[in-house]
Every structure is written in C-alpha cells, then in structure tokens.
Image (cartoon, rainbow, N blue to C red; front, side, top):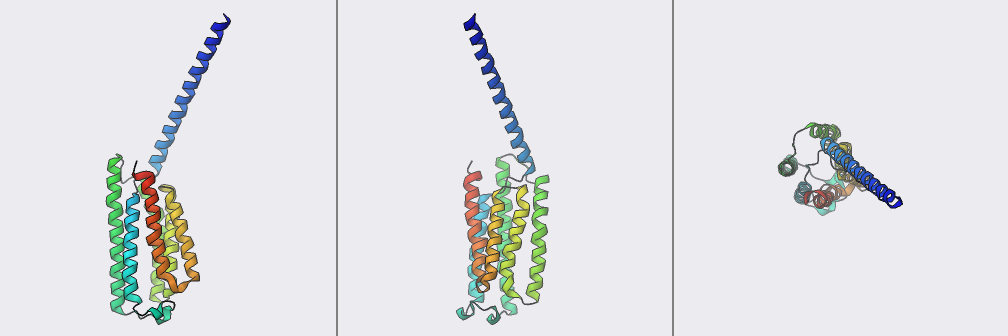
Length: 224
C-alpha cells in the first residue's frame, strides 16, 4: 500500500510537470505570435550591409568632388561650392538613397516571402510613421541650413536626426535598430566637436555602422 501511494504520487507529479511545461510552451508561442504581429521583423540585415557600402562609395566620390584641395579639409569657409558641384552632390546623395531604399525593399520582400509574412501591415505602417517624423523634420531643417550656407552642421545633424528616427521606430522592428540609432546620435554629437571632419563621421555613421549592425542582424536573424 505504501509503495502504491508513492507510485501514484510520482505519477501525479509527472503529469503536473508535463502540464506545466505544456502551458509554458503555449504561453511562449502566444508571446512570439504577439511579438511577431506587432513588429516588422522582415527587415533584412543584408540590406544594411549593402546600404553601408553604397554610403562609403558615395562618401569617397563626395570627397573627390569637394576636397580637391586638401588644405580646405578643416575649414568649411574655404570650400568652393559651385552650382555644378551642388548638382553632382545631389546626384550622389539621391543615388545612394534610392539604391539603399530599393535594396531594403527588395530584400525585405524576399525575406517576408520565405517566412510567409505580409510585408505591408499595421506594424509596417507604424514603423514608417515613427521613422519619418524625425527624419523628415531633420531633412527640412538641414535644407534650411544649406540655404543659409551653414554647412558645418549638416553632417552632424544628418547623423543625429537619422539616429533619432531609428530609435523612434525601433519599438516596431528589430531591437538592434535602437542601438544603431544610438550609435548614430553619439557620432553626430561627436562630429559637432570636430566640424572640419564631417564627411569622415558621415562615412563612419552611414557607412561603417550600417555594415556593422547589418552584419549582426544578418547572422542573428537572416541565417535561420
């Protein structure tokens, strides 16, 4: 009788343990589904790597166009910015932006198809809205600075406003975007101390940081 009670006790404990594990697995699955539905998780790390490469190439071309005389490296007042130069810089910037956007869209769509996710949903809309508010505000402000020929703050502010946009949108996508944004903000603030090296910090932020965080995201999420 005593042995029977022990056996019954262990059977009950084993059953309860299995039930608890089942409930925990169900809760974990529900949590993953809720997190998946509230976040845009199809963002491709490879697109970040390629965007960084585009930016580095663009920064190299910009350097050749602007700093044809290396004595002007630390003094924005000595830069010679003609209408032709502005047009060339606009073409470079537009090309980098378009290539980065197209790459991000194409690779995100491909990733979404692999995981049977919808590319356009509520989380995508929230992501874009929260990203574009600080991004467009900063862009308009920077255009005013360019019109007033206050060129020294252009590079730092592009980094800062882009970083703010990433941080603001990070709650609707992969958490690594938050750290990318913080890195951009720090580089932008540091760049205000070294105003003569704005292009260098721009390349570090938009180029190197994108490649670094894109690689991290690729190995964490894309290779699964």
